[in-house]
Amino acid sequence: MLGTVFTLAWPTMLEQLTQTAVQYIDTAMVGSLGTQATAAVGATGTVNWLIGSVVSAVGIGFLAFIARKIGAGRPDEARKASAQACTITLLLGSLLTLLTVMAAGYVPAWMQVDPAIRDLASEYFLIIYIPMLFRTASILLGTVLRSAGDTRTPMRIGLIVNGINVVLNILLIYPSRTLSVLNLSIPFPGAGLGVKGAALASAASFVYGGLAMTRALWKHPSISPIGQSFRPDPVILRPCFRVALPNLAQRFATSFGYVVFASMINALGGISTAAHTIANTVESAFYIPGWGMQTAAATLSGNAYGAKDHDRLKRLGSTILPLEVGLMIVSGGLLFLFAEPLVRLFSADENVVRLGTTVLRMVAVSEPFYGVPIVVEGLMQGVGKTTAPFVYNVICMWAVRIAGTFVCTQLLGLGLIAAWGCMIGHNMLLFVFFFWHYLTGRWDPFISRK
Image 1: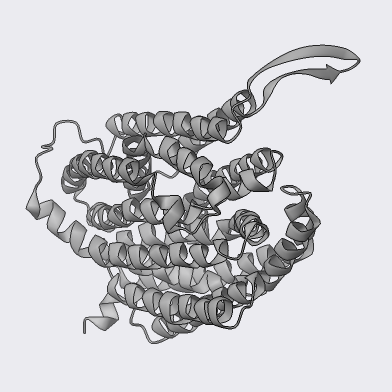
Image 2 (image 1 turned 90 degrees about the vertical axis):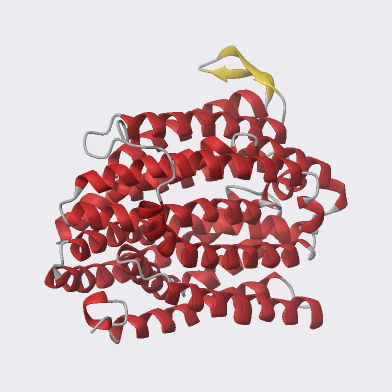
C-alpha cells in the first residue's frame, strides 16, 4: 500500500513543489519592486483561490466517478465521463472568463485594497483572468488524468508551465540591463513592465498549460474522449454533480471566507497586507505533503470503493493517515526553524519581516493537526462523501476564522497576529471534526451504509 500511495503522490508533490517555487520566485521578483507592488499582486490572491476552487470542486465530481468506474473495471463509462468533462470545461471556462473580466475593475475596491494601488491591482487581475478558459482546462482535465491514476502527465506539464512563467518573468518584469559575468558585460533584454509583466507571464503560461493538458487527455491510452459524445449526458453528469455540488458549496463558502478574511487584513494597511501575502506564499510550500497525499487518497479510495474491496479501503486509511501526520510534523518543524530567512527572500522591510516571521512560527505548530483533515477529506472525496466536509469547513471558516477576525481586528483593534490566531483556531477545529469522523467510521461507505 505504501508503494502505491507514493507512486500516485510523489508526482503531485513535485508538481506542487515546482508551483510553489515559481510562486516564491514571482513574489521575490515583484517584491524587488517595492512593498506596494507586492501588496497589489497579493491583495486579490484570495479571489484567485475562490475562482480556482469552483473549477477544482467540479473536478472532484469527475474524479470520484471515474476512479470508481476504473476500480469496477468499466473503462467505457470512464471515457464517457472524460468527454463530459471536456464539455463542462468549455462551458464553465467561458462563463468564468466573462464574469472575471467584467469584475476586474471592481474587485480591488471590494477587497478594501489601498486606493493608491487599486488601479495596479485591477490591471493585474484582468490580465491573469483573460485566459480563464485555459486555466479551467488545466485544472479540470488535470484532475481527470489523476483520477485514472496518471499523476505524472500533469506533473510534466506543470513543470513546463512553471518554466515558461519564470523565463517570461525575467524578460517582462525588469528593464533591459547589463549583467556582469566573469568580468564580462552582457546586455540582457527586458520589457520593464513591472507588475504588468508578471501578469502577462502568468497569462502566457496558463494558455500553454490548458492546451497541453487538453492534448494529453486526447492522446491518453485509457481515458481519451475520442469517439465519445460531447453532448451533455444526464446519466453521467448527475452522479458527478451529486458529488461536486456539496464540494462546490464548501469551496465557495470557504474561499469566499478567505476573501472576507483577506479584506479585513487589507484594511490593516500595506505592511500587514505584504506580510500576510508573503507568509501565505511561504506557508504554501509546507502543505505540499498534504495535497500530494490527498490526491492519492481520493484516487485510491475511489478505486477500492468501485471494486467493492473494503479491506483495501480500510488498509488505505490506516496507512496514509499516520504517514501524512509524520510528513507534516517534519514540514512544520522546518517552517518554524526557517521562517525568518524565508520571509527575507521576499522583503527587505524589517516591519514586514518581523510580522511575517511571527505569524509563520505560530502556524507551524498547527501543521501536523491540519494534515489530518486534508487526508480524511481526500478519502471521503474518492468515495463520494462530500456533504460532511462542506458542513465542517463552513462552520470552522465562518464561526471561528471570520467571526473571530472581525471581533479581533474591527472591534478590539488588534492586528495581523490576532487574525492568524483565529486562522489557527479554524485549523484546529477542523482537526477535531475530521478526526472524530474518521475514528467513528462515518467516512467509510461500507460501514455507514449498513
